[in-house]
Image (tube, rainbow, N blue to C red; front, side, top):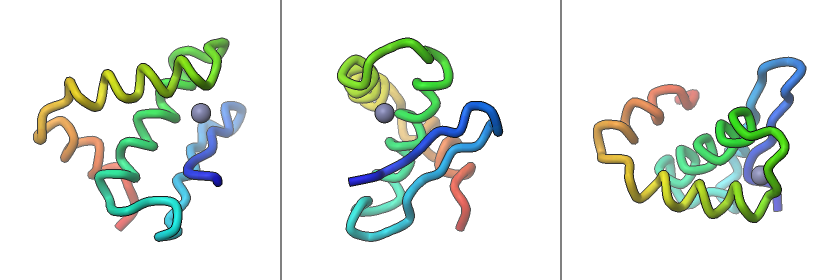
Length: 74
Ligand SMILES: [Zn+2]
């Protein structure tokens, strides 16, 4: 399953819009956080990135999530 993909050379993040991959826009925003963590920590393994993703997602308030969500295409 592919939820998102980072293209570091192109500064491009792909978020899979398929309903089978994301339940809703909150879920897509969480994937955006995941891919941004790959940008910040390029040498960190996938399991650690997933753990950071969960920690950061819990710490973000609704306003912060809305700001991140605004970067998703409509
Ligand atoms: Zn990843």
